[in-house]
Amino acid sequence: MTNDDQGPDAQHQVPEGVSDATVEALGTLSAAVEVIEHARGLLYGFHRMTGTADLNLGEAVEQLREAGHTELADRIDTELVGRNVIAGRWTFQVVEDYDDGYYALAKELERTARDELVQGRRHLFEAGMKEDRRTGGRRHHEATPSDLPD
Image (cartoon, rainbow, N blue to C red; front, top):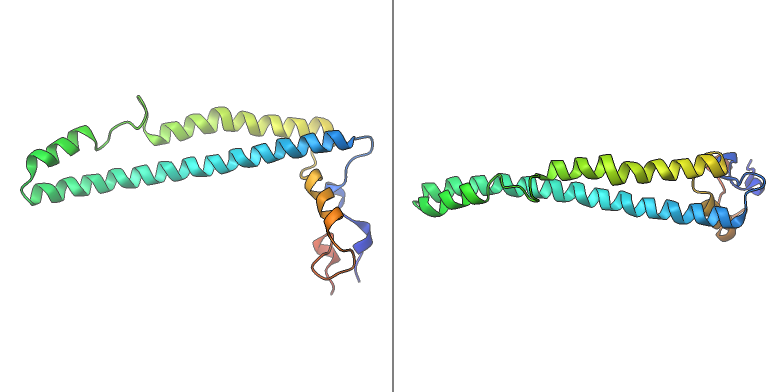
């Protein structure tokens, strides 16, 4: 048996007295934080790829030396292997600064906004979109997992 007509679960229902404008603003804030999360993932990818490249450069240096190209190997080894990617920083330091600064503040302020305005509830805008777009009573359009047929 389903309770399909009940709509979203309690954590995805807009609290009484909260305006549509507030829900929309929180949806936009949430979308911005999702982009920040994506950027963070790309930054971690940059960190991993740069680290892998540095290890590969070290391997190339050894291979160049073994092939008799010591002058070029020495130059790559001293000028590029282990070099800071940004003044004074390896990528782990860039990641840490991002995580501890911009990212942490964005997450904190988004949570504060949700806590102060909608009792900490998440994805209210998206839950409303789901209700507007789904076909009630139709398989694969259930409001919640508990609405799935037995």
